[in-house]
Length: 210
Image (tube, rainbow, N blue to C red; front, side):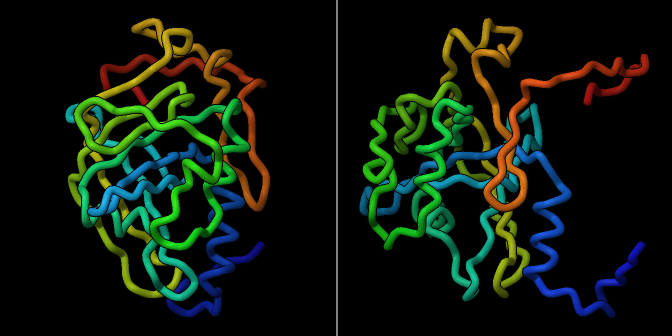
């Protein structure tokens, strides 16, 4: 057993990243499209992602600065055009989603790289991925920056203003896991499926469901 007091330990940022990504899992994946001020599209996946609020509806994801402390195009674009579309790709588009994680030069279009069609998203100027089963059109609320050193996070809080969802996935009340086939990010190159589920009944309470 090992204990680390971080203000005294010699753990590198890389070691902490590997511990986080290997133990905080499976993580849902935000597949985020943005536009810069010239109209160039960007598309990238982020696994530091989750629901932050329901009323108002807010999603949060956190692109890390790169190894040289530089922001990714997603952050640069959000600073120029404060809108994005957050997609839930499911297993059906995992290869295309993975392709868009490649580090392309600024202004190059990951939609084109992955052979993906763009479609308009109501309420925002940013396009959505045509084949993605779920997409949330969002307006930027805030970016919370945690520093300027390599691997520092930039927590994007994005308020949902429009929703696209396939009828096969959602009936207005329940999401079909069989139709969505959601995936989770593990460490390294590993992903997890949700095909093996088990049920644990929540205790009765008057609180907010979790």
